[in-house]
Length: 511
Image 1 (cartoon, helix red, strand yellow):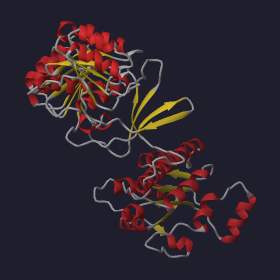
Image 2 (cartoon, rainbow, N blue to C red):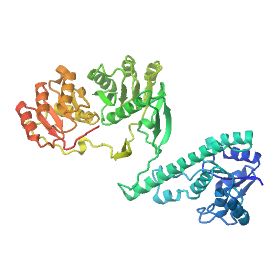
Image 3 (tube, one colour):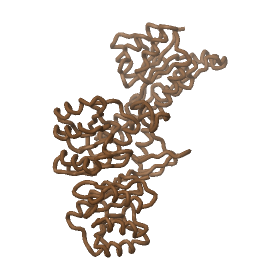
């Protein structure tokens, strides 16, 4: 009896060549719908599914492979005498290979004008059922879901006239990953459609982008996966124009640099080291913004990640070229800038679409034995209810400093304090165990520049000691969430020194 293969694919890439190879290795090929027509038109001898089931495809193709003649042929255990007896008695012929890929559900829901009805019609039922049946019975059935595996199958058939159990097992595992990812997209789409915020189970899927040399440290293995639904304004979908492969730490830092630079509408440059901004500058041009970001901390920017929200021009590129930088991310680079920067062999140059407003997926954090999920912190000053509890209101210049500081402190590890002045950060205190400690670090970094600066705090002041430290450094304006039971102490201290203090009503903890 000839070996049998069942082939039904939505992705027709390479399928004619693959089926031709199967026929050469003495396979009888069953097919369905559009795949059947394509193979017949190519002159290949294939059997229609209805010839096997003795039943027509019905309900616009919704039902065609859900039949005992198909699933009996897939699930029958060849070493089980009772299974084989039943198959012989019922006239069910074994199916030895299945090649199936699924209705394009992801591609369908990616369409901007997709309707709910279109999405539902592109949920494949028969395909996953055949794949799962074949994968379950992989000791006897080879199952292929990925066109990149066609050559593997044909090579083993050419060498051994069979597919090894090791290959069948690997392909079966791939099938279950594939169907799990497919079902995850469907379940998440339907969950969003019905507005369920806390489902009883939560399944997500990501696609391999690249294997990394190592993680945070050389002894840690690491891999980079990206969301299956393209997010063009993200590091996961950035286009790399030049330089060596990104590392685990590069990806984390680059992601943070992009998050910060998105906060700005004016030309802005952000420098990041170890997930914290070390220098942020705004300007009327990208060169001016870069000058300010560099001046903010000319020591820490060395070896840093740079993100800009405007094209990098030749003048800015020349200044960037003078430094050792790991990555420069921008919407684009001028031809002259590229010529200047690509002379550095290892400098990574990435472009990211910053014009498209990003849609943020929930932030996921693994803990031992579990997962935390929360909304991304996209709250900005435009969303806040601003109050000024002090006697003095901020001046126009102070308002500009306060706004810049608040945009940046949101992205600094807590406890966080940022000092801003003259359209740039001048001091950053990050990740301290108490707030006044973070303030002292920022003030020490700023030095004399702190005179007349604004201070931004990611959370409220539990004591008035931070206001005291700010006043002694010459800081004239403070922005913080408010909400402490000792707010009045901080307000009185600010009034004592003539400091204008702004409450936003929202904190930005970042652990």
